[in-house]
Length: 252
Image (cartoon, rainbow, N blue to C red; front, top):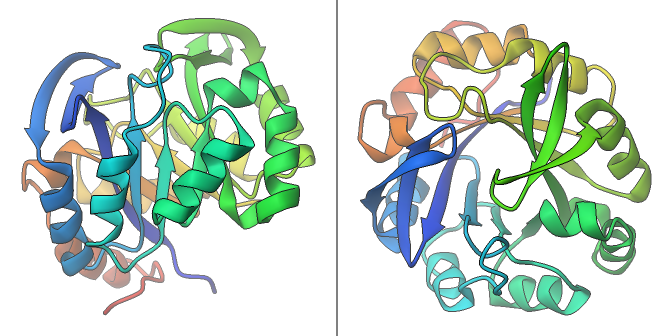
């Protein structure tokens, strides 16, 4: 059985790691380079770095910080935010990223997924989806959760996989930062209907939440931020709990 992945996320704004609730009320959470080093040493399986205002500010990602973080980690490193072109993908891979996450640019230019997968391999292309529940379904949002698209999340995820996405980073905007638990219904619906790994994001608040997203939500990985940033939960303790719960983990 494949091991499940624990993935800290660095949401970066103006060179600092930040965290909010439901994509608003943003507060400082630390230095990205120092946090990356800590998570690498604590046994994280991967690390995600998202420049959360690059798309809405219509600028490129802060590649100098990407380079600094990449030098500190020896685990798979995913980078996203403000990546609009094949050249942007290439530059971030050269800077040290192992995978590239695209959200706004994927919606605006779906062929970027196909071209990126063709040139660099599907394993490099992660499509990040910010999902907000609207009635009985979920809608895709872009520009750091600021802009609604009227695109159904389920329809969109099917399309991006067909275009060559190698992984889905699925964030519940409704659960983001709340610590009320992951959106099991949303994650399960997507995980059971795509052929690529799904990383669940938004809502982690306890050890049990991680077990539930793996067992009931069928996620391949679980992403969290504030729980780790504010030292409320140690990655090693989380992994031991999950192992005791019969969930396969990589232990270093």
